Image (cartoon, rainbow over all chains, first blue to last red; front, top):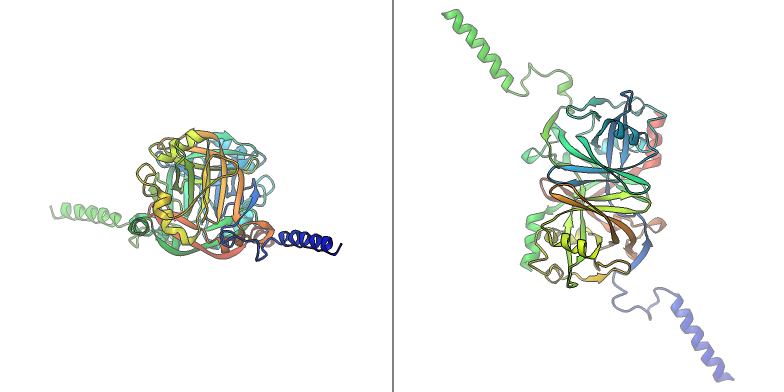
Length: 226
Length: 226
C-alpha cells in the first residue's frame, strides 16, 4: 500500500512538473534559446508598419485626408504604391470618383494630426480646418496634398483589388515632392531630417526612427567574408 | 547703339537672376517657409519602408530567403500581406510553385544577414548555409521560416498581380509566431524588444526604431481639444 502511494506520488509530481512551462528539468537546450515561439494565430501583428496619410477630393471638391498603415511600395517600373482602405470610409468613395490620391508622409511633429486623421471621418468633419493644416492641389492628379508634410506623392489610380474587409488601391507615382530642407545626398529625402515614424498594428502606437545601422552593400560584404 | 547694349544687358541680367533658384528677389514669403518643395519626379523615394525577409522552398525542397522592402499589410479580414517581387528572382518561381511563403521580420542584430539575403540569388548560393541561420518548416504552409528571427508569419498565396517590373504576391496570414521573449502586452510583439528596422529606398540604408511618440487615441484627443 505504501509502495502504491509512492508510485502515485511520483506520477503526480511528474504531472505537476510538466504543468510549469519553464521548469528547469523540462527544457532542452534549444528551448532555452530566445527562439521559442508562441503562435498568435492569424492576425496582422507585424511590426513596424509605415504611416501614410492619403489625400483625396470628394465629389464637391472638398479635400479630405485619412491615415493608413496598410500601405507599401509595390512596383519600381512604373513606380507604384498600394493602400488598402475599407469601403465604409469617406476616402474610398473619393478615390473611386476621382481616380487619384496623394500619399503624405508625416514627420514626428505631426504625430497628433496623423492620429486624428485616422480616427475621424471626413463625412463628419473638415479635417483640414480642425487640424489647421493646408491642402494644396496636386500638379498632375486630381487630389490634394498636405502643404506642411515633408514628403508628398501624387498618385494616379491604376488598379483596385477586393481583398475582404479592405479594397486595395494601386496608384502609379506621378511625382514625389520633398521639402527642400529635408533633402540629403543625391536629391533624395534624408530620413534623419524628415523624421518620419512607424506604427505598431495591434497596440496602435507610434515610434520614431532610430539610429543608422548601415548600408546594404557593406553589410552584405560582412556576411560574404565570414 | 549704347542704348541698345544697355537693353541687352538688362535682359541678360534678368535671365541670370532667374537662373539662381533662391535669389533674394524672387522668393515670396510662402516660398521662404520650410515647405518649399522640390519635385523629384516619378520614383519610389518614400521613407521609411519595412524590411521583410521572404522564405520559400524551391521545387527540390531547398529553402531560400530573399529580402524585400516592397511589402505591406493589405487586409484585416482575412489578414493579408503583399510582397512585390521581380520575375527574375529565384523566390518568384518558388512561390509560384509552392503557393506559399513566409514573412520573417529581422531584429537589428540580423541587419547584415538581411542585407546579404537581398543581395545574392538562391540560384547561386545556399543563403542559409552561408549565413549560418536555420530554416524551420512552417506548420501550416509549404514554406520555411528563419528560426532565429523574432517574428515569422506563415502565408498562403491567394492572389498574384502583374504590375510591371514587379509581380505582387498577396498572402493570407495563416499564423504569426513570435519569440516568447519578444512579447509585450496583450500577447503582441513588443517593438522595443523586437528591435526591427526600416529601409530607405534610393539610398539603401537601414535605420533602427526610435522613441515612443504616443498612442493613437490620446494623440487624437489633443487635436480635438484645440
